Amino acid sequence: MSQQVISLDSISSVSDTAELRDVVASGGCSTEGRCGDSSGPDDMPPEVWEKVKDHPCYSEEAHHFFARMHVSVAPACNIQCNYCNRKYDCANESRPGVVSERLTPEQAARKVIAVSNEVPQLSVLGIAGPGDSLFDWRKTFETFKLVEEHLPDLKYCISTNGLALPDHLDELAKHNIDHVTITLNCLDPEIGAKIYPWVYFNGTRYTGVEGAKILLDRQMEGLEGLVARGILVKINSVMIPGVNDEHLKEVNKVVKAKGAFLHNIMPLISEAEHGTQFGLTGQRGPTPAELKSLQDELSGGANLMKHCRQCRADAVGLLGEDRGQEFTMDKLPEQITVDTTKREEYRTYVEAERADRQAAARKAKEGLSQVLVEEVPTRFVAITTKGGARINAHFGKVTEFQVYEVDAKGVRFSGHRRLPDKYCVGGFDNKEVWPAIVDALQGVDVVMTAKVGGGPRKVLEDAGLEVREDYKLEYIETAIGAWYAESAGIDAFAPSEGKAIA
Image (cartoon, rainbow, N blue to C red):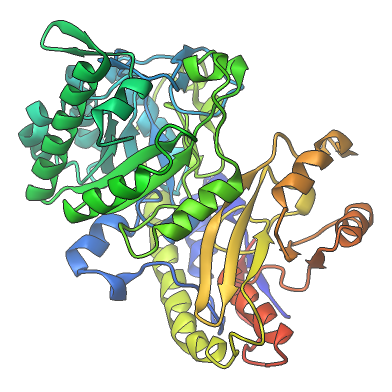
């Protein structure tokens, strides 16, 4: 496979405008083959596609190309959740409610401008706490107002528990906030009482079923109000085994009926060291198999988000990475001016790349349809990638695997499986991470990677895994489709001879 390589690193690191323009102008791809079943412009109304196409949380396709940024301007919260412990100055935990520094709206605006100048993939500014964005609504709206004066092209979104949401529906629409995430874990107050110890509403603290009912009623009112105003809604639900896991099937039905755009079912994070009530009392989180089983049962219900990374409240970068520590306030330059050149050029490149992928997807659909389902069952593929929807990362350099499932119906993103650390650290093998790698690859048939050392390859193959490096720099979906067709003895995919992102 002859490839011309464009480095994503080169786009984000060059400082000369002419040089950047040359790098991006040389982009594009003529890859032919399977590009996946991620929702695209043919799958939804044009006005909806415009809202989601550059939002990495609302579009599985977009998460390969675009980055989000959260600013931690809303520390106060109006409910207590048994799975939450809002931590400050904690750089080593990657989960919701954790930040390294709290910001004023003015500091946040300054930081957003600095990040936008250095991260060309940035497309979304979100406020997700570390408390509740609408309980601290003055800080939230002031932040959006300040940023919008300088970067009106960014998409703006918030995450909220929904208790204060009905009070701010018109204000959300006024600020051109097209995306709102509501954390909604149940519809039954009896179940809610097991999740929320207390709710603070209109100056009074409510506990038990009474508090849960107030919260759930307000969440439904907020959801309906957002949909009525044309604002896209993502529902986040934390899957808690033995508490709400079976009940989430009913939640999925109801939020679909009420017009939610996506339903994101997240596994409970319950390690005791995080200091949450559930963690301290031994409430376990779901296994990957349990989460996958629930998602499979919900096929046909509300559209599911499967690429969530349960981000920190100060996360920066592509999903699956966090560059927040590069942009703490003490590291920002004294003088910051807006320079949109890199982001504009990057978006131009992505549009060309998308066109190639969509054309390849249409052609490849015919190829996969030649595979008889009864001859080749559904297979699972683990990918190493650093973005750009390509197989472009070294096996030892990743902290997660992206897992896809494939059959004659197509290639579908199944989920990501995190690792506690990279296998290759400072040029040395980090063998302590092997148990986590083995666990992450349970049920996987093949690992596709840009490069892997001889030692790790042997361990993987001894464990019964196929390891492929020959699809390096290919589109993820194209490579998976080609491998699957090959396993059925069908040469349905032409190799890429175009330009690829490394």
